[in-house]
Image (cartoon, rainbow, N blue to C red; front, side, top):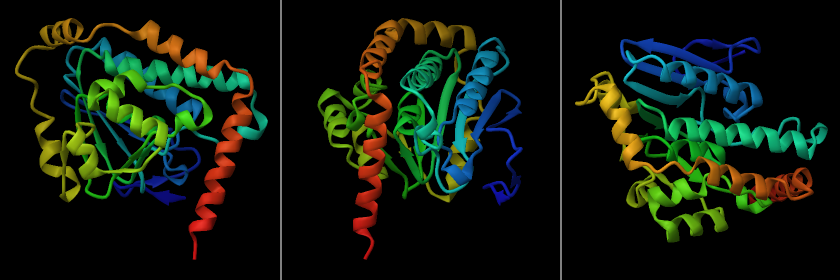
Length: 260
């Protein structure tokens, strides 16, 4: 048993995503702190269910993402990598792309509060939200290209520019909060747990949800088919599981080498 940031006990039976509504603000809290909130299949499906339901509820004006424990989200869950197949991995990545697209095209205002690591698909979750706050010690990383995956690249390029996106993706560099803010991945860096920033989210946007949804649709061309095709082409190349396993082994070796 562990304890989350709100003091609640987190047990093996706890839901992978906590859903709470305060008037028009719906908060989705990733709830696998012992795993760094890595995206399991159950977590992705629970998030999609909540987002899909919220899209039909015009009393909700804002969706907020946050994470329990030390990290916001450390990316794709590798816990069962040895027992999975290329096809199963492909399906899981497709569902993550579906989650990213659902947030990018959500009719409500979307927001995210980042602490600790936002790596891999966790960093992609940050990029798709409209308002993006991070603690000063937050870090961001996009390692998917290290095992041949194209996920979230176009949306990241819209946020930070194509040149910066390509550099971050191909180098898998760790970007600190100030660097993320300087390039536009983060909207603001917040202290005190983001209390003041969070309080602002309870205030509805200046325009009604119907108009806000129409504005988002008009200013965000729908690239869902192209984004999904880019992912599937990269993930369908034979050997996906082995490429991820090789990447994980290199990452473990690098961490071991850095320990005095």
